[in-house]
Image (cartoon, rainbow, N blue to C red; front, side, top):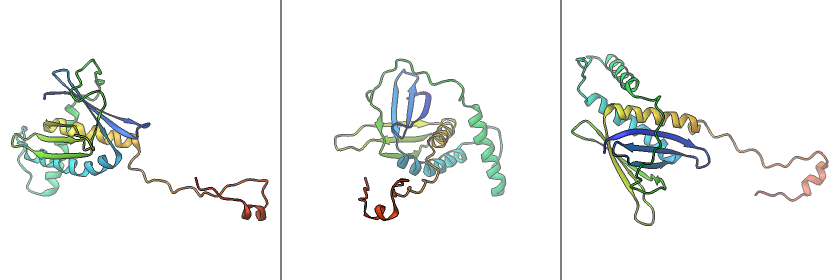
Length: 191
């Protein structure tokens, strides 16, 4: 599949990220990513993306830096250059596209990653449900990988999934007209 555009949007009513991938053949694949799956996916995807970046032969003629600090600076520069080269300003074109997996997005329950000999990152998004599940497999180059990471990070920021969950408020009911003695004998409801 030749990927044309990728979109990641947080849907608060679903509390999920909707990933839309359109191909140059006018097909669209829709994926739901849950909080749990996304938070588990990000460290592995970030690490694999870094491996993909180091495997890629530098086109600028930069040799591998002799020390780790210089190598990290070069890697960060290349990540930024690839991300900068991506087009994040053009809105996702939600035209009438064929939906080979159906209208309902695939609820991703597992993601498998592999770096291919070609240098592309292969991602398999799998839906494991009681009935036969669906899956989609894509292979993306380094630039698309960095773009996908950026979109997922933006989705995480918008969803606020990385913020700590506030402590549960106490279940104590407050009323101004009840005396303390009466409050001790009042029934308490937990639901």
